[in-house]
Length: 113
Length: 112
Image (cartoon, rainbow over all chains, first blue to last red; front, side, top):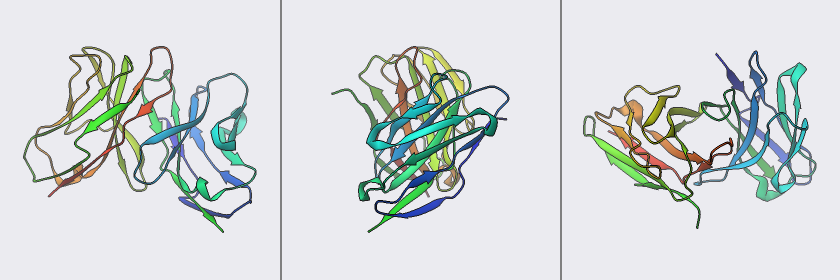
C-alpha cells in the first residue's frame, strides 16, 4: 500500500534560519505530491504541489519543494523562517489523479525568536 | 465568497446516537471528500465522491456513511457513533480535472 512518512513530528528553528521538513513516499509509480499547511484551529491550505512538471516547485509564502524520484522524496524548504510560519505541515500524495489521497502524519514547525 | 462549509463546527454526543455532519461547497466542484484528523496520524480519508451519486471508500470507511444527492452537498453520517470516532473531521472539494483540494474549517466531534 502507498504510504507517506514525515521525519520528525516536531521541528524547531530559529527565526531567519533554514526550514527543512522531510517527506518520503512509497510507491511503484510516480505520484502527485502536495504540501499543506494548517494553522491553529483552521483547515488545511495548499502550499504547493508537484504534478510531473518541473521537479522544483515553488509555493506560497516563500516555500519550495523538490521532487527526487530516486529518493522518493519531496522535502519542503524555506531559506529563512518567519514567526508566522509556525504551523503544522502535511505532505500528501495521490496516485490516481485526485481520487484517493494519502496524508503523512504531519510535522509541527515551531519558530523561535 | 468561494468556500467549503461544515456544520456543526463542534459536537459532543453519546455512544449510539445517530448524527450527521453536513458539508457544502459553492464552487460547483465535482469531487468531494471526508477526512478525519487524529494526532500523530495526519489526515485519513474516509469517503470520497467523484460526482453526484458516485461515492467510494477511502482508507477508514468503517462506521461511516455518505451520500451525494446534489453536487454541492456531501453529508457524513455516523449511524451509531462510538468513542473511537472522536476526532477532527474535514470536508474537502476539488474542481474537475484538478487535484487541488479546498478544505472546510473542520468539525470537532466528541463521542462519550
